[in-house]
Image 1 (cartoon, rainbow, N blue to C red):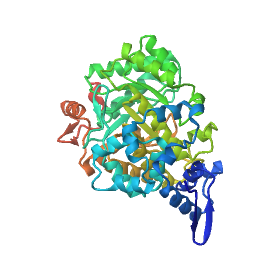
Image 2 (cartoon, helix red, strand yellow; image 1 turned 90 degrees about the vertical axis):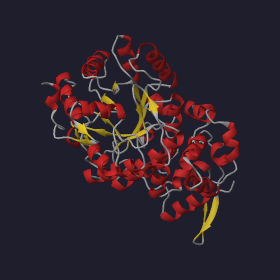
Image 3 (cartoon, rainbow, N blue to C red; image 1 turned 135 degrees about the vertical axis):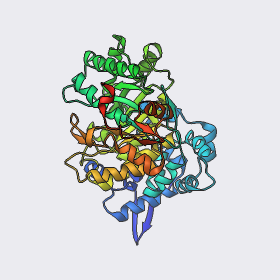
Image 4 (tube, rainbow, N blue to C red; image 1 turned 60 degrees about the vertical axis):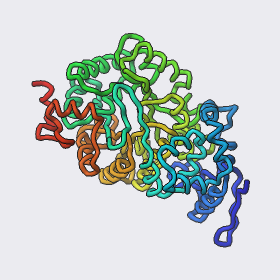
Length: 454
């Protein structure tokens, strides 16, 4: 395993695979803040060159957090299919990249390949790809999952309807819910971020979601994105839910900082099997975002792309219905500007799909970073072009509770028209029944929430 190279007459030597991965990463403010980024473009190219010659085996045998110390590493390593892995273990990372991008590599090939790839390997090949490479490769893959309906089919772009409210007022939430539905949003999920993380508050919102879903016979899923332990408590007290949610990290220490472990997720899955309202079998919802491990000092000197990839290695163990990266939510400390946000969104989507994870994206930004709504529109269209499972929708792109900007309720309809995409089939038939959509396009009734109160 060679960890040095000569470039432009200068010798570059790296101490470990972890350092090569960090310095081969595209520029990210989080890596700079952590003191692990390449100090120049020349050093970054040198690290990429070294990385390209490393073997798949080298990255698998050198996880960024030790197997004996970390359950995320153990879950990731133990999930690998040895028969698949043994066929590629001696490929260089450059050869892996070329294979993924080649004409001969089909969608079925990529699904099989993913069973032999650890998260570090997937992060490594991601670092050798341009944005267009990431789009092209991700467009080859579709990852479906089924809760009440099936998400991720080719030709579909779904949305999570996010009717957040600054005080969790149920009537205010319902008004926003009706507005979103009137724009054709919500086929992936009716999902609220609560202000009050109590079983009582979550239960109240879940009961209203369940009531609306059943009264109007809406073929979708419901969830309130409280802490996983609060959701478990709410379901044990009788609250209806189709899925249970949790933000996840790429290390056990990061997940402990979030207040849960793999065993907590297994407990949630078992509870939903017994008392959940979904048909299943995919009943978990996870959110990620580059840089979260830096916030909790749980990155172990690894770069944020590699840690993000490890999130997907953890997620695939639990066969979720939904995963998404909240790509610009943490702020400029980790993704400084629109260039970094767009790159991160494309990286995250590609890495999740190569793990076999059903991936969406909250294409978002905060008001103190160098990005604006045009940048988010660009990212949304790029991700839709490579088959992202879903994006989010909030009123007028402005979340009044989380105080950040993402997609508007009607944005998905525009993107669907441009790219010839549709909602989940059952949901589209429901929209047609309600007079909101016809032949894949919104009608003049779209955007009128009084449809649901007349």
